[in-house]
Image 1 (cartoon, rainbow over the protein chains, first blue to last red):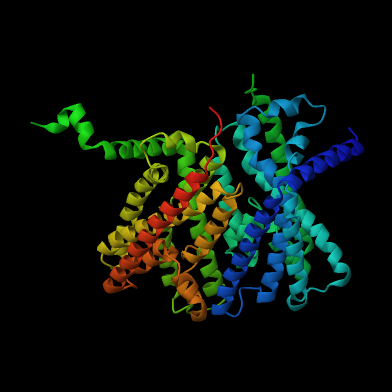
Image 2: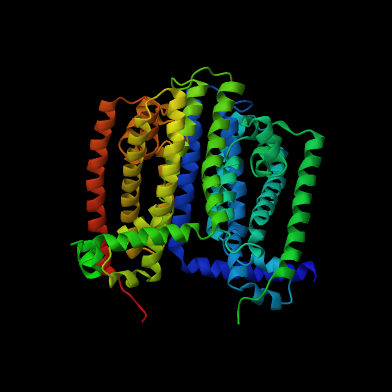
Length: 263
Length: 277
């Protein structure tokens, strides 16, 4: 199947989601309100920390706020395009919703991950970008053409978020309930909300390799502000590559194990 | 004559308690039916927040070179983290979301025809596994108190305060869940509330780190009663007089919470339309 076909399917999915969200208008307000409170709380947390100390290791206050802007934007992209699909992921297997996807002439994984979108989170994406712009100067971001790199790092952050979330969700083929693993994902996700330089070596190593939550916001912000050594670029692509292979292999094995739950 | 041995008379003596005990049993069985999931949930909700807090203190003290933060040394911060994790374990879960979903989906109708209070029923079902965890935390806490050289009776008092705080939190959550009678997206109110509670309860950091000019924010809510307050008392940083003062404050909030539920659910039920057979 060619790229044009995928693009066409994606366009239709986008349209359907737009129509659905246009019907539930209050949903937009609630999503904005919830994320705005979350952003305020993260800012307050670092506000409290910096009220007690002058700097965190390697990160000044404006740099941390710049990191938060990057993290919120990256997370908002995940919310827009993927979050709902992962919420419904367990139903694909438990309730047999996967049956319908398997009968379509499109790879079921593509449909499983792109069917639902939360377009209301666009506002939060913009809010994240505004925060980045606001703190870019005080944080020492060079600006100019470097803003183009933001797009690349957002794509890396989004890829990391999708691959990690998928690695936590795929076990539904082997377990009856995915609630605890999802909860565990969100617990570990807290590691993404702080700059990686703060962590002791072992945890830092963990969030840069086996659980690469640092790729969502922290590493991109560090790369934009201070640059990265070449080996770290290689490491990022190696880790994401391994996750991709692992996830895809598990998906294939899981599909073979899947038994239709519907009549 | 032993009245309890005659089923009918036993029924007459304990009708109000029987459904509560049944709900407790049911909640416990439901939570532990999937044992691996139950254990994963406990592990996730204990170790990850503890690790994140510890990391924060590590960054501030060990890497950042601070000697005291908000009057607390590095070991004191770690003690706070460890003790606070014990109290956060008895949090009531997502019961408020369950209530709002019942209203939204119409499942509430099943409870309206039964002689049970739905708000209380959901709480009892949810608290069952937490009671087990609270017992375990109490046991661990006593060991920790002995290690610190603080009276182990303090942990008992602290756990009691944490349970009261938990009830108050649930009361406020249940009142907020009643917005589901008016509004499809009531869950977002609960999500916002949860985020505020995380911040204002002392789960993320000791609340005395908040600058004095902002201290009124956390002091004017009851949420500190179920993590920060119990932790302070258990670590010997609150006097007994202060503890009893806070108990009175908790009692006042319990009354407010009870009134809130009566009003919000009373008004909500009047608006409730049950569809379907």
